[in-house]
Image 1 (cartoon, rainbow, N blue to C red):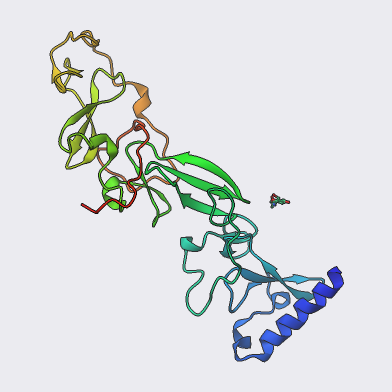
Image 2: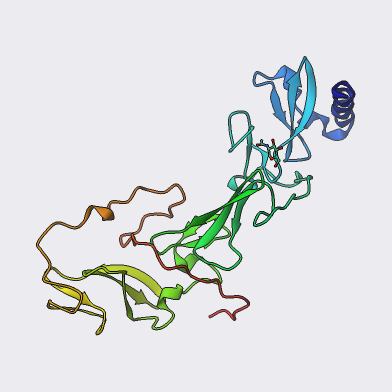
Length: 252
Ligand SMILES: *[C@@H]1O[C@H](CO)[C@@H](O)[C@H](O)[C@H]1NC(C)=O
């Protein structure tokens, strides 16, 4: 059977060579890498097998990027580069599983602005945007709320778009909402955040004693994340409560 398919592939290669586009198909057996892009379909490529060109499909949802490139098997997420520029198209239809539009990819969450799914061979893993970031479906990564359509104002600031919000049990850090965008703030030295008045006050309060004069906790030094957005001076460094993606809500 493999042999039959083999010949069909070779005929397919020759046939594509018979067409005008032949000049664009590089015979993989004449290249050093023994692998070459298809001329019409960005999710297909050719490999030199036993001295003959054989056509392969990228894993579902991925497109050909080049040997040793991309996320697996020389294939990459289509949005990472201009792999599918006109007239090239992705020909294989999506194979969806729960939470995954394609077997491989990064997809938005159904109900949350702070979560998203990474799919690998159809298996979805839920991911969480930390530090006040929201999932940006265009960038396929966590991003600042003002860059995320439909989730522009973080749910944390729903109650008062310019108010302060306590940060967990922290005695000196809090969220300051600025027009609906939360920014991490720290009370001036010797003051503590009072969750009743939502201001920095002289301690003690009900929850917070006089702070000891120690350097800031090490938790602030966060490992850079692969999907981190461009640097900002006020990088929030604490996780939000889960936010819910507003469904069919009129834009602000
Ligand atoms: C993907 O999953 C299918 C079945 O779920 C399995 O048969 C196949 O080997 C997997 N492929 C890879 C590359 O892991």
